[in-house]
Length: 108
Image 1 (cartoon, rainbow, N blue to C red):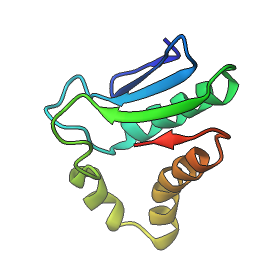
Image 2 (image 1 turned 30 degrees about the vertical axis):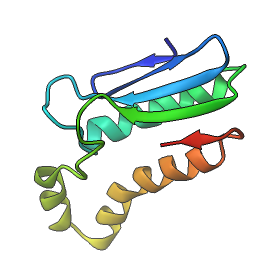
Image 3 (image 1 turned 180 degrees about the vertical axis):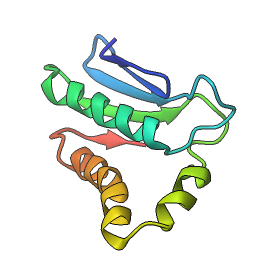
Image 4 (image 1 turned 90 degrees about the vertical axis):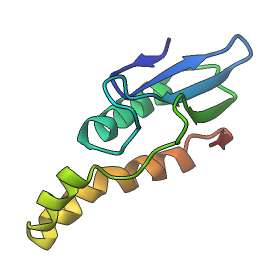
């Protein structure tokens, strides 16, 4: 096990393929709320320092991959200033950029 959290986990096979699985334990669906984004960042931190990875598969243990942002959180953020909205969205784009730069193939 490379990483395990409430919203996602990462394992690595003997052949060097890592598998990141979205599976929010306390919810019927996966969503990109603050907890999931923070765990995604932590999982990427672990992937960055784990050796012997040849590729990454990202999937969901639920019927729907990820339903999107948590509307309850997002509605509150939209009432903020433009700078606060940008600060809320930055970790999302940073994580996606990090996926692009991992140095091995990523399949979703």
